[in-house]
Length: 393
Image (cartoon, rainbow, N blue to C red; front, side, top):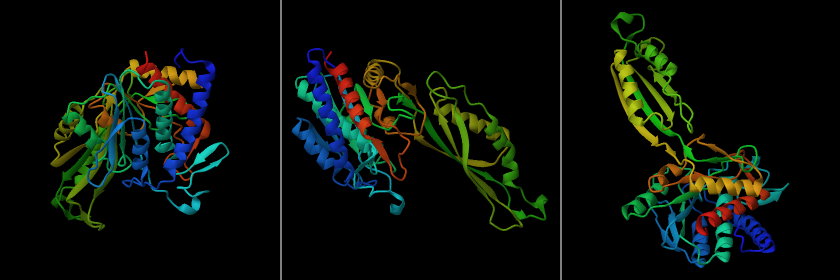
């Protein structure tokens, strides 16, 4: 924290932030916002941010609610990004309390979205309020990028806001995405990147025939088997400092009419690459095509890029977040790029630095999702200290 404030003031402000983070998490959880519904979360947030001097710009597309909010026009621009939508609850009878009635018990706050990621948004707001209370004339600018379509198709959510900002040349210097990143202990992990996801849909063609007369047909499953074996055994890369080795996995395979006496006319195989920066998309596509051609297959292959890999190496944002986590928790966070995709993949197109940090992720998408009340308090403190480092020095 800034040295010009007394220890008593710092303690008072941090306790106030902790109380506000819990209060705001209650407010958000009680709003039913299953993807792509927002449930009034963004109207409530916009009202709070407007009172703090933010200009709030709705960016609604295709039935999805989003907004971009900004306070200040100078650099650096520090952005908090997240989503108000949540996954479905699952069987209500298995919850120990209503998933949209925030409930405190045993030091935890229970409710759908508590950890993913209404708790982080609540901590964002408490931290920004506390920071602006002490630094109304801070350097740079603060922004918010909020969507209600992160848990769904992610077609009309963050990507649309990013497109709008890119079209008018508006860039972000540092972005914190509030995804739940911690594993065993609060503060033990932050994500400074994510792997890319590349989908392939392969159809291997054969000739349908009676199974008793195989010489009259061509079995596409038999033809594809050696190529599948080679694809599965291929070492695509060794990874690098930040990303693990690329993996290739079949997700679905189908061939045949359902009858027991028919050689199928084609076999359909769906597969996926999870890859880092060591193997660009074009390289993976070219290697797969060359392998299939080498096996002499008659095939059709369609590609879909689910996500591009992104990476933020050590720099001002990673260093500020690392220092803040260590000060608040005493834990040195691991830098990681593991896990699935996040909206950071879109934001990275217009942001110099993107890092994800939030609470423990063990209960996300589960029955009785929860966040530690102490985690919320510490999360608001971490976010506040990052602002101190980036916008007051």
